[in-house]
Length: 243
Image (cartoon, rainbow, N blue to C red; front, side):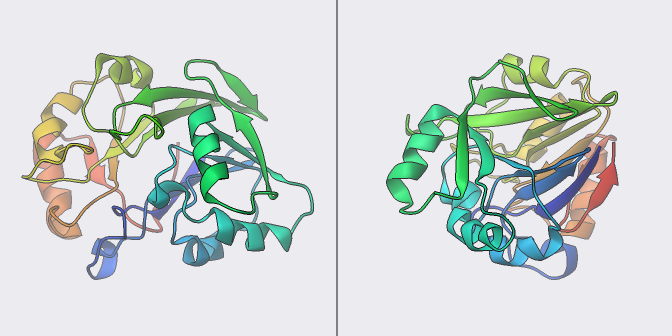
C-alpha cells in the first residue's frame, strides 16, 4: 500500500516556505486501485499529482474536506462518463447535496461506522470521531487494510478517545490531526500535549497532518515531535511512502 500526501495543512492552507507551505489536507492511497481521501479546495492544484481515481473517501462535509467536489467534476468528466464512487456518512452526503448544485459525477455510497467494506483488495472501515459541534457534520476516521498493512487516517479530531485507540490498534501508520501546538481549539488536537499519550498507542508509526499556523516550521517540528514521541513525525505535501 502506498500513500501520497497531497496536502497536510489546516483549513485555508498553512503559509510558509518549503515543506512548511501546506495545502489543505488530503491523501492518495494506492493498492490495486487509487483512493482519494478528502477533496479539498486545493484540488485544482492537487489534481496534478493524480493520474487516475477509482474511489473517494470523505471524512466530513466541512469545506476543507469536501470543497473541491465541483473542481473534481470537471477533472473527472474529462476522463469518464461513469460517476465516481464516493463513500461518506449519510449526513455528509445529505449536506453535500444541499450545498452543491451539480453532483452527477458522484456515485454516493452511504457508509455506516463500524461496518467493513471491500474496495478491490482494500478492506475499509470508518469510525465516528469528535470534531465538529454541528450534528450535520459528523466526522469519520478511516481505516484501510491490505496485504498485511493498515493505514488509519484521522485528520480531524477534537480529542483522543478509547474508541479511536482501539480502532488504530495494530496500524502500520496512524495519520492524525496535528492542527494546534501550545494552544487549544475545540475542534482539533493540541498535538504537543497529546503526542506523549499517542506514543503509547499500539501503532508502528505516527504522522501528523492538518498542521496549522501555531505549529513550528517543519524542520523544527521534526525535532520537537521526535522528542515527544520517537515514532512520530510531521508529514509534508508531496510526501510518499509504502506501508
